[in-house]
Amino acid sequence: MFEKMDVMDKFKQMLKAKKPNKNIAFFIDGPNIIRKDMNIDLVKVRRALEKFGTIKVARIFLDQYASDKLIEAMTNQGYEPIITTGDVDVTMAVEATVQTFNPSIDVIALMTRDIDFRPVLVKAKELGKETIVIGAEPGFSVALRNTADVVIMAEGK
Image (cartoon, rainbow, N blue to C red; front, side, top):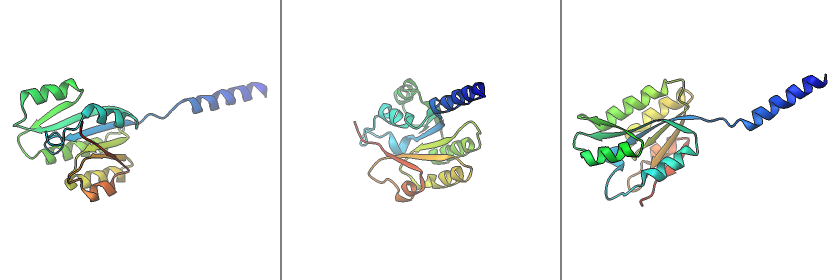
């Protein structure tokens, strides 16, 4: 009897000590967010997002006009640049939607201001994923803000 209580007590302590860590897939709408006039610090954004879990996927979507210097800077900051010759929004939406079906991903995080990504958030929530949007003014979509479970506002440097 006493031995069972010890085992149960140890089990309860393990549960209390173990903090659930969620896996995050993070996608950045490069042309919409990485602009000189916005001057957003992606290191601060990453730190803010890491409070919600572990970033397992970190991709920034750029168009074919992205400079080699920008691509290198994003790589150095731990982001995987995805260069597209077509519409960046479409490519990013497809990639984010694919991750909603990934059983090892718990959270879909999008950094954008664009309402075009609302269907991705809706689908992610339908599939039981948590959603985070990192947005910035001016032009941050109210509908996007209202759809996400968590909203983080990014500010310039």
